[in-house]
Amino acid sequence: MKLRILAALLLTTTPVLAQINADWTGASDQQWTNDLNWTSAFEPCNVGVTTYNATIGGGAGTVFLNANCTIENFTMQLGATLQMGNAISLTVHDSINNGGIISPGGNTVASGLFISDVPGDQKVTLTGTGEVLLNNDLDQIS
Image (cartoon, rainbow, N blue to C red; front, top):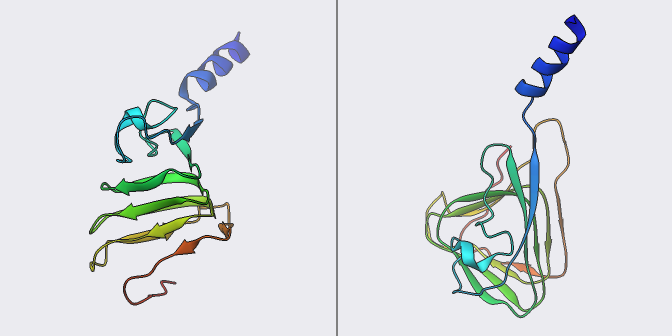
């Protein structure tokens, strides 16, 4: 009986992690934050225990990111551009495979592309043949 109670408690208190793949369709407009533009039917930004892998396919044109967002993995294919607004950041916890152009916007410290290791994971990768455009000075944060 004690074992059943313990098992029931573990099942009810352990969060279930959900990782969702979201592919860009651009069905409505070119705004990242529009849920209708993604196959997941939700803008891919991590919320609670739900995390996202975002993919923008080739030929997508320019996708505009105008709100801060954190995702797990990001793939962008040739022919796509991610244009970030002023003071907007995209944080990627695991990997970026970039075949397109990532263009952080603005002149403020908060703008940019952040590749942030998930504690305990100790790996972050940036691969691909695309470009990351830097409009300002590059600062190294250790």
